[in-house]
Length: 71
Image 1 (tube, rainbow, N blue to C red):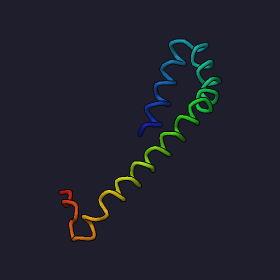
Image 2 (cartoon, helix red, strand yellow):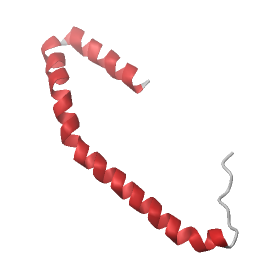
Image 3 (tube, one colour):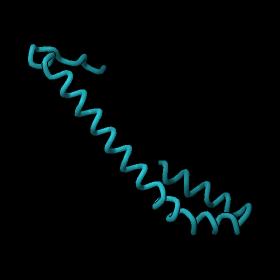
Image 4 (cartoon, rainbow, N blue to C red):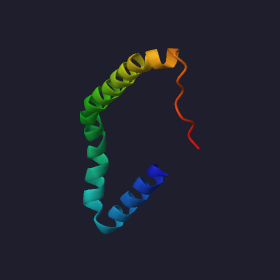
């Protein structure tokens, strides 16, 4: 769904201002490559916090505590 919205927005931009749409099409891979290290850092921090949470909740899990079921 997100991809469909992006393609539709690009088509509208292409109709309204085609030079800007072509520039966006050419610069998108460069922006993606520049954002890649930040995405990897975010994944690393997310995994680190999940690991820290698992370590901190281990004693409670061993004593029989279970997280509440999501309805």
